[in-house]
Image (cartoon, rainbow, N blue to C red):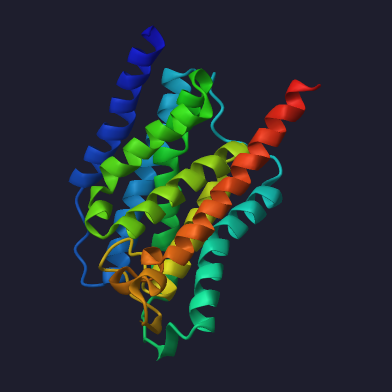
Length: 268
């Protein structure tokens, strides 16, 4: 009980204080939307790095391991595949049934800045949700409890998802759960960061589906048509039941892998 109370206080200071600080830090004065978003995401990232380092060193006194720098290529590869597989399956099926058509590309200035902003957002969000707090709760509780806590924090940041349809909401929640399972499976932040970045870059920036922010541009001119439960309707890829099935399958894959790992350790 004592640990729970202490962890709640740590969560309030780490999670809420960092979010409030990011919200109140001033923007730069510029008419360049790419530079403005890069600044905002950069501020978010800097705040999360400072908070993470402070809590690891000053609060936990280095007794909590958050970063794992071993097997970087393996973690990157796992994250890459996890980020693109659900999207790849969904896009392939929609193309096959002619529910997704491409008619060219939009002209976008400062593409590198936009991609950097997406990267900064992915790193900062993972530090916020699956960095210090994930490892803190995992130290005391089993994985389902930790996933539930992180999911509640995710919902508090993205409460709007429930106004965009049940399939969209479930897909967003499944993506969050998958990233938690990925963090547990890889013992690494690199894997969920990689998955998060490539997912956002492909879904939002490439296809104009899931949007990090309404200010982000879309590279491809993509038209979704047909049955809204398959094509996603207004929610596009994240509103598609095809993606829901793909996300469920990916979550099931990691759950099976984690159970096999646990069983293997018990038999040693």
